[in-house]
Length: 68
Image (cartoon, rainbow, N blue to C red; front, side, top):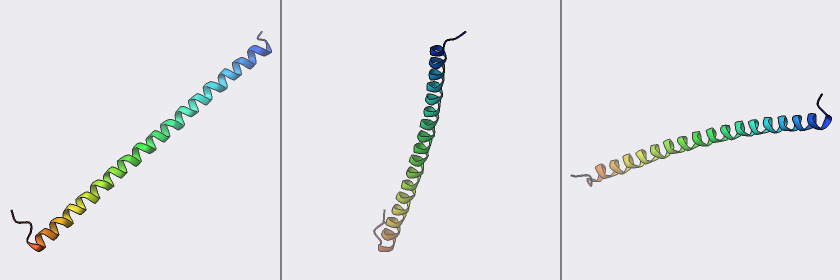
């Protein structure tokens, strides 16, 4: 039969393992959210860049500066 000390030690280890697993899950969720935000910002940046290039080309065409 396990002593009180052994039971307390067992439950402490069990609680520690559960806390580590929960922390790992939270970190995974945060990492996924950060990756998603990064991808969203990259896509937005590419859209802005494409729009700016298009606007610059439109100005060049309108002013005749886009002759090759």
